Image (cartoon, rainbow, N blue to C red):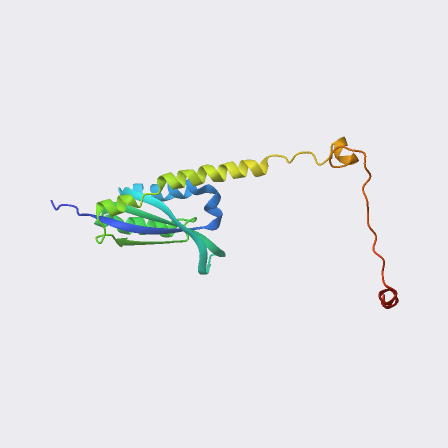
Length: 167
C-alpha cells in the first residue's frame, strides 16, 4: 500500500460583498468545503474587502478569505470541484504553500479578528433596527433653548433697488 502524501496549501476564497453581514456563514462555508475532503485548517483570516477589477456575476465588490490548510494531494481536485459548484463562492484559488513554514502559516490566523468583526456587525445591525427616539420637542425647547421665555429674533435683509428690478 502506498503512503498518502499530505501537503500544505494556501487558498484564497472570494465571496460577494453581500456576505459581509454574515461573515460566520462564509467561514463556515469554507470550513465545510475543506472538511468534506479531510483537510485540516491551519489558519483562516479575512484578507481584504475591496472593489473587483471586473464585475463577477453582477458583483463589483468582494470579500477575500485567506486559508492555510493541509490536505492529501488527491483531495485538492475534490476541494476545487466543491468550490466551483458553490453558489455563494465567486472564485477560489489554491496553491502549494511549500515556501512557508508552519509558524508563518499559524501566525496568519485571524479567527479572533473575524469573531470581533462578526460581533461588531451584529451590534451595529441591532443599533440600526432599534426605533429612533420620539421627534416631538419637550415643552422647554419650544419656549427657548434654556427654558427661558425670550422670543426668537428673526432678521430680515433689505433688497437693493437694482436687485429688485432684475427679478
